[in-house]
Length: 336
Ligand code: 5AD
Ligand code: SF4
Image (tube, rainbow, N blue to C red; front, side, top):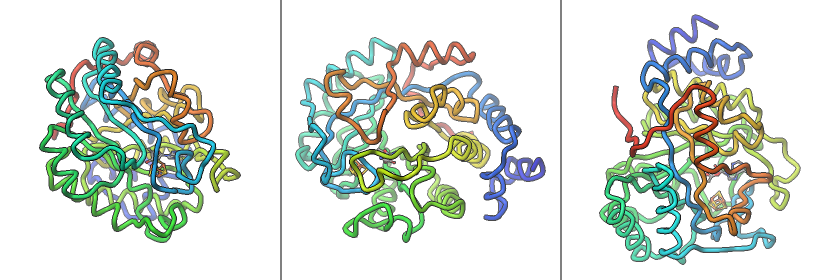
């Protein structure tokens, strides 16, 4: 095991079967080494991104997600530009310098509306980054939003295996369309985050290795990894959630493979385990995303059951308790 970890740290790549051995291991040293690499590069500094869940309308029907259009049980909402700006104001006073506008694929938000929102945020908060996480959009749309000032975009590939992608999504969605969108984002100069769920139905260790190899090739700035968690009103209601150990090992392998990567300790990780975020940080994660969504609609942004969102103050307190410090800056990706 130690030889594999040494070699991954040195060469940043392993053979597929070797990756599987590491992902599957029970050894604490994998995570300890990932934590040490994080500390070498970032010290005890953890980046915060303020999450604004601006719409829970979605035209897609992903089998795993509570916001799917086929779930009639979700009380739908959309935030206005003014409501979004109010979330930013609140986040700014709490020291947040990145605002992530996240939502389902909601055609209600036209390019012009979104461009207006991005422009307004950038005008009022010149020292802040704007991240969009609004699903697949056309080339024209992505280009326009970049020109309006959007700095970053999060779009998980969800899986890098086409057959597995088809098990998680209805036929009108495809891995090739998802990957094309990711490459477009890169071409337009966004800092890009991709990612995937660990333990989604039908996923094998081999699929996770395919994700690692895609990430190696795509070379994103951020990778979001969290456990799959079933939602009671989806076709996957009866499936098992992703395993804590496998999520942590995946984070650790990513840290060793790409040492300067932005790696969030996700809300989903904090949901399957009360101290999951802290465990993620101790396995190499260096980003946490406090929730800025107003309390009256937060419960309606239900991707999965029992979602454990957390306020910035609570997150900062928890970071201090494990000897980490929340960074008050945009926290751009940097090459090492
Ligand atoms: N469990 C865990 N993560 C989920 N997501 C959607 N549904 C679930 C679920 N049931 C994740 C997807 C998506 C992101 C916004 O949330 O990976 O990209
Ligand atoms: Fe919509 Fe995203 Fe949920 Fe799929 S995962 S149903 S695209 S919000």
